[in-house]
Image 1: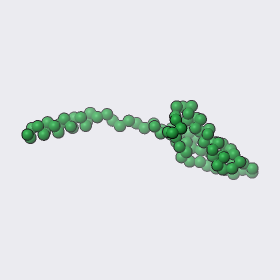
Image 2 (image 1 turned 60 degrees about the horizontal axis):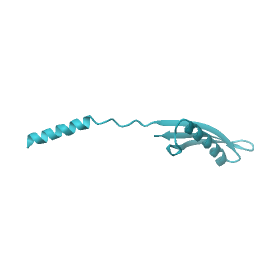
Image 3 (image 1 turned 180 degrees about the horizontal axis):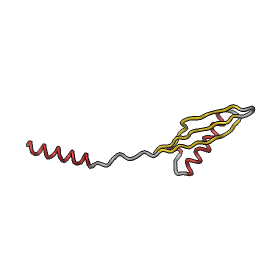
Length: 88
């Protein structure tokens, strides 16, 4: 009985050690700027451009989200810079 348990433990250890390593996670960062009459319009404009960049390199919209934005006020419009972070 003791030999059988030892053999079973060795088999489990061998299977565990030969398991495939975890898959690497691929990430992407995309930056874009946009303008608009208000802060939300400027961010939406910049996000639209950043998502276009991401799609052109093979990312899907569901794999990306806005991680940060910087909004600036000008005389009669707003500008925004958006950081789009993608992961798969």
